[in-house]
Image 1 (cartoon, rainbow, N blue to C red):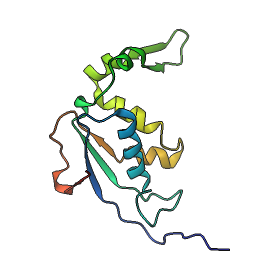
Image 2 (cartoon, rainbow, N blue to C red):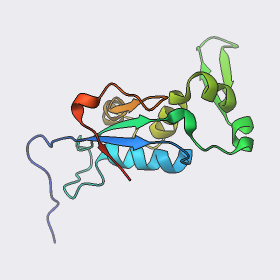
Image 3 (tube, rainbow, N blue to C red):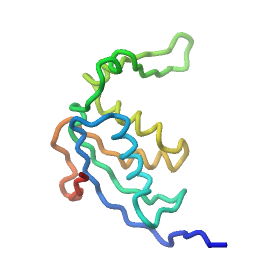
Length: 141
């Protein structure tokens, strides 16, 4: 029986730059979740913060099918009776396109303490400019 490899010490994290121009939402979200979890590294260990920081630019230029824009809705509830709020995807893309990607990626991460730490490593920007130039993020093809 082989022993399971467990990394010792604190793994180092890189910064990755992803351009969302003309990319599908679901495929982009799986790629982002893959990098956040660290599954692209040969030393991947489940339950350990192995992933990289991900900077996503040009989120407003996502390729989304027109039918999807009209049929997808985002829900939140205040906790009070009648407190359900609904926002359509078309309206969400106009006002807060970063929330569309964040919701898609969050659905692919574990919903526990590790997942909440991982989602904070995701940095999303509407345009091509971002504030993480000093970290020198490596572009992904």
